[in-house]
Image 1 (spheres, rainbow, N blue to C red):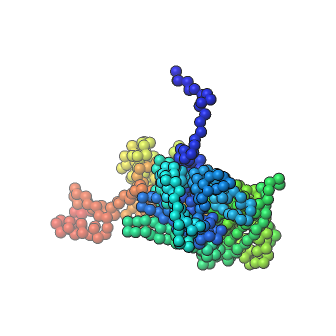
Image 2: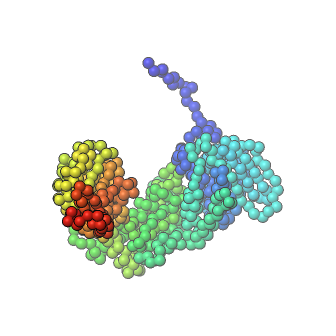
Image 3: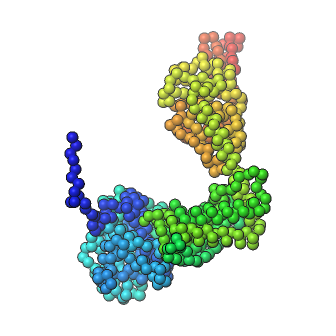
Length: 595
C-alpha cells in the first residue's frame, strides 16, 4: 500500500528572495531553456533602450564574451541607487533585489518613461536573480557606483567614489547561471536579430554588437535613421508595386468604457509588392512575434478597405468569393510600431498584446488612412486590388489542386486498391523491398520472369511521361502515370512552391521501398524516359534522391554470342571493340549478335 502523505497547516510554504526566480525561471522568462535565457538578456537591454528613447544617450553596446557572459552599456542617466526616503530603503536594493519595483509605474504622467519596454519592475531583478554573477558600474551625479551579486545575493554592498568624467550611464556584465537555465549558449544570431529589430523601431539610436572570438572581437552596427520607413523600403526592394507610405497618429483610448483613458501612438510603414512580403508588429519597441491586437486590427482594416474597393469597381466575378487576409498578406510590406503608457501583454515574454483599446484605435487609424490613400492614389489602388485578386485566385486554384491530389493519393494508400499492371512482391518489410520502374509492357514480362518475387516489385510506365520540370502542379497531378507512381511509392510529395505550399505531404517514413530502381532500354528513347522519371522524382520527391533511395539499372545495348560465350556491350564503340577482337580470331560466320 502506498504511503499516505501528510497535508496540514505546515505543508504550505513560499519561495523567498532569489529562489522565486532561480527555482521557477519559466514563470518569469517563459522557459528555463535557451529561450528563457535570451529573454533575460532582453530585459537588461530594454532598460537601456527606454533611457535612449527618452533622449538620454544615442548608443547602446552589447558584448557577448567567450565565457558566455554578457555586457550591456548605455549612456543614459545611470540607475538611481542612493537611499529612497519614500520607500525607506536603498534604491539599489529595490531595483536589483525586489520584484515589482521600478521607476515605470507612474507612466500616466508625462515626466518619466511615458512609453517603456519595461513596465512590471521584473526584468533587472529577475535577471540578477538568475545570474551566476552580476557586476554593475553606474556613473551618475558625479559619482561612480559599483555593485556585485553572486547567485542572486549581493556581495560587499554598494561602493561609490567621486567621478570626474562628464559622461553618465550604466554598464552591467553578468553570466546566466547553468543552475537556473538548461542552456546559456545564446548564439550570436540572436543578438544580431534583436538589435536589428530595435534599431528599426528606435530611429536614430545606434546599436553595437561585439562578439568575442579567438582572434578578438567581431563588431556589427545597426542603425536606421528613418526607422520603420527605411526598413520597409529595404524589404520592398527596388521595384515595389507601390511606394512606401508612412502614417502616424496619436490618440486616447480605453480597454472598456469604465476603464481610464490612456495614450496610444501608432506608426505605420506600408507598401505592396508582387515579389516580397513581410509583416512585423512592434509595441513599445518590443517585437510582437505572436501579434495579438495589432494583427487583428491589420486583418480587419486591410481586408475591409480592399474588399470595398473591389466591390465598388466591380472586379469580382459573378458568385466569386471575397478576399481574405492571406491574399493581402502575400503581397504586403507592413511594419506597425505602436506605443502606449498602458499595455496588457499576454505574459512577461511580451510576444503579444491584448489591449482592446489599442486594437480599436489601430483599426480606425488604418481604415481611415487606407481610404484616403486609395482616393488620392487611384493608380496604386488599382494595382493593389488587382494583385490581391491574383493572389486569391491562385490560392483557390492551389487549394483545388491540393484536394484533387489528396483524393488521388489517399485512394491508393491501400495496396488492395491496385494500380493498373503494378506487380507487388510478397515481403511487407520496407527495409528489403525493391521496386523496378520499367519501360512498357514488354519489359514488364521479361522483368517479371527474372525478378525475385519475395522482395522485388515491378511498375511499368506507358511511354514518355510529362516533363515535370516545365509543367505546373495542376497539370502534373492530372497525369495518371505520375499519380500512379506516387501511390505506389507511398511517401507523398514535396512541393517547393510558394503558390502550392499546401500540397506538401511528404513523409519518408511512409516510403514502401528501400530501393527505387529505374530500368529502361539502353537507347535514345530509354534514356529520355529515364530522364523524365528522374525529373519527376527531383521535382516531387527530391529527398528520395538525397537519401540515396533511387538507383539506375544499366542494361547493355548489345548481347554478342560467340559459340558458348556471351559478351555484353553498353555502347556502339564497345560493341565494335568486342567484335573486332572476336573477328580477328574466328570467322565472322560463327558470330551472332543481338540488339
